[in-house]
Length: 254
Ligand code: PTJ
Image (cartoon, rainbow, N blue to C red; front, side, top):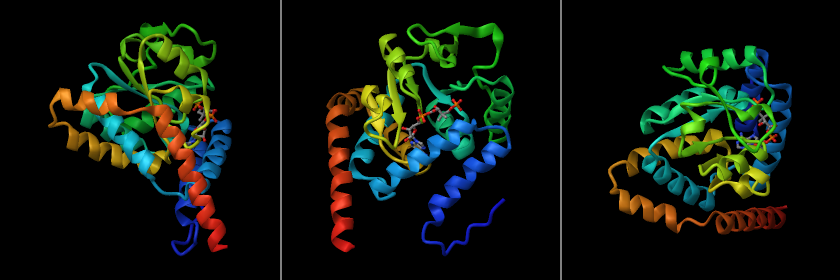
């Protein structure tokens, strides 16, 4: 493992990159997952590598929506398993959500490695590997169509961090509420989800867990109001303005 000096000006970003590379070496991450990480890094740079106001707003709405859910499910792919397995387990335990492994680049061995990594980090039940419960999500042709009938298929709210386009639409069409983490505010997933957290999942997930704990004592009616008051399209537009303002500030400093 490469040692990243703490004094390096980009140490945080390099450490996240190392997690992905280690995840790849351990058979958790698809080759393509390394490219996805690179794309994310570029957008994170534009965001100023911090959790902005719009991300905080989306996190609040997401927390309210997860608490209100009857059958929430967190979908885990290779990148998430490498980046924040412990936090995913913590989010699931805090909210009562189920965890399901669902891959775009289908590979049974990698699926099993991801299950093992999640179990090592405290997960008990993980859906998405038992052939008995295999079901098909309509409206999608990629490997992501294979879901668990007691998990994503039955869910009312699905959290899909670092997603690739068409599943979000298929989930929405089947009546589910979709929450995503995506550093690219213009991606199809970002634009199609009900709630998009435009932030690095490694930063935002801690805030989401805290927010879920904080909001768990609130009345359902006030949680519902938080969800109803949130406008994803508007928030994404404001996020792009945040990026623009960040770049303008950088130009002035340079
Ligand atoms: O493990 P698999 O087979 O399910 O494959 C997972 C990947 C991520 C490879 C697959 O879903 C994929 O190809 O995704 P895309 O289409 O590259 O989209 C990933 C999105 O996540 C992009 O919009 C990236 O900007 C964004 N992203 C990358 N890293 C992060 C991120 N968003 C939040 N936090 C990150 N750390």
